Amino acid sequence: MRPTHEASVTHGARTPDLPPPHAGGVWTLAGDRLIIVSAEGPATILVPTERVRLLAVDLPLPNRARRLAALPFAIEDQVAEPIDSLHLALGARLDPAESPNRYLVGIVRADVMGAWVALAEAQGLAGAPMVPDVLLLPRPAEGWAVEVRDGRALVLAADGTGFAMPAALLGAAWETAGRPRIHNLGEPLEGALQGHGATPDLRDPAARIDVATAELDLRQGMFAAKREGLSSGWRRLGWILAIGAAAHIVIAGADALMLRAIADRRAADTRALVALAAPGTDLTGDLKATVTDLLPTGGGQAPDRFVPLLARVSSALTPLSGSISVRAVRYESSVLTLDCAPGAPDLAARIAEALKAGRVQGQATASPDGSIRITARAA
Picture (cartoon, rainbow, N blue to C red):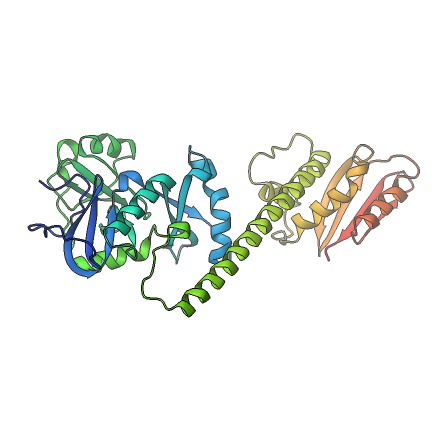
């Protein structure tokens, strides 16, 4: 019988275990042992998907260093364990055409990953990538690709994420997921799943390994694979580059935190001004969409500069928020206009000073009836 966590790379007799060191072939983890399933090709270790959580994460950032720095913040609401106890690995884009900022992310407990790496090094496979075995399945255009073998089910979804579970639970998971279409790659399915016929995977084992490794290699960061045979000069250069990259990531992380704080502050300022202009407005959803909907119709779509300008004006007028009652908000030709109810005799002058102190290009004009019109122009 095949081991519980052995992926179906070949369906014939398994190649006997080879003594370390062995620099090539496809290996699979079974308990605390590494077992070789194919002696062909570069060294690759297939790890049990039960121990890896695969997520699709949106990371709209310009380079890998910034994406890595933002990754802990992007997934913190989706995991129960403390972030510092987890190893996060950033994979390939899942849908470059439709969702170019969506990436596959693998999450493993750091102590589990450390044990896997120590086992690989003891077996002479220090340079081998580690890939969740579910990624060997062909990704379906819709529904699930399913492989059931020896009481274990591997499932790869159309969105590029996947999971593994006991085959006995597959039917319940399928029902909960809304009965997605199944492409069966393994043993015949049972129960309500029987109606889904077999869909053979025509790729050769080497192609399957290449695709899986390109999708996600868990050997990243502190668990990055060791490359043998480097000269001392190249090793020294590697250390220099690594230190530079680490510094860049720290700086990128600080930038991300600062930008997040600025965005939160501007959002709070905008909510305060909208609360003055339109009391009772629901601001729990998309703030930009809500503010845009408050604009008069017929003038075309609001430019992207409207919300930043509104936030700047709101921030500048925060010290006077208790004295200003906004009746109407308009935005036209890059000019924001706020019509306010009458106030103290010197209120217009105080508003003008507040705009100037906030470095906002604007003015406040008092009408004969005491009402005040505030105008501000986008820079």
